Picture 1 (tube, rainbow, N blue to C red):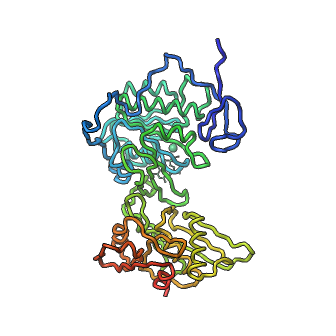
Picture 2 (tube, rainbow, N blue to C red):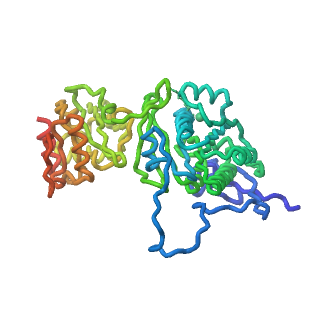
Picture 3 (cartoon, protein in one colour):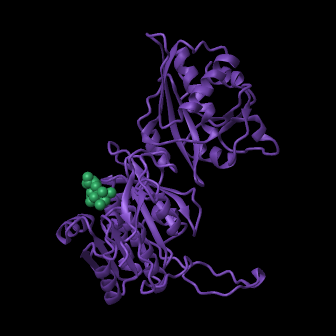
Length: 456
Ligand code: TYD
Ligand code: MG
């Protein structure tokens, strides 16, 4: 018999090579290639189904009927929204996140609810015993009905259990602990994860079972074997947040059944995750009145506006090299805005240290936050407080112009709802739009003009 072939697979990106390489030529990481046996592709392997689960024949596009995707709704509105309106039967959903962030908690809560509205749930855990899961479920107040626990890691047994119980929903916690017995490579290796996920996909599509897969994220921020997993599943959600804060953000990064811009915000409490219906309030609640270096921006997270405080602390630098540090904001964006302030608004910032922060542990990344960053920096530098009832939206260009942003009406409306009296917006956004609300909408064309009006 021929010796089983081996290959070297990068544990970071899934790249495979016939020989060992110290550095992965695909992702550039060092020492990530690990020897794995190649999958034996003899005919006794099960036939795979297509990603859609349908064996359709070619059809004229005009004849394709548009059916509403049926969805099962949970009581967690935020969760439904991130999925695009609810759980799609037969879909494969990957939930990634750091260990300890609350993935098991979220899925236990979701399981409890799906079980009430949508059918039988099988929770497969490779990490915790049934007792541990039961303790968590009790704490969360779920697990009354048709809710099965199964501590197991062997995919063969898991498949048998699924066939026997015929659940509507299966939770796999986590994919890194599951093992396909035909494959000899180590549990958690790329080959194992790939095979386990392929098998789960087949189960989901042939039996119309919704499967949620938990994936732990490695230090680099990627789910082990991320590329392989992400293209195989229908939906990829990331559960993130700061372990030091109680807020958690669920973000869709891929969704075959909805928008990828959606985001749900939860708070981790004693009795589990509770939804945060009005995120702006929490991101603003600790704001000091009359402090300098603070500006409120209305940022869009998906289709939803949230108000966040941008803070800046500008101090003369002690050593020759000025420090630029930022949390939750892109450093390059901050440097660019500081250069514009220096050149176009005559702020002498080159020998100043600048520390920037988006309060509340959020991460902001869109051009519309520029103006708030600029105002916060100028406010700290000049030691002049901003008006606590002002808010800011606008992109800053290199010539100091304030550029148009998207979804202006929604942003203005959110600021109004939260009681802001005035909002600075790009002048160009006001063309053909006459806001008639009880908030003063001020159109600005340059950064200089904005600072003059906001910090006087
Ligand atoms: P867990 O869901 O086990 O995280 P993951 O599956 O992502 O590794 O949750 C981890 C943390 O959440 C744990 O430190 C305890 C905390 N927690 C609460 O604060 N409240 C709760 O109701 C539960 C169940 C957990
Ligand atoms: Mg867990």
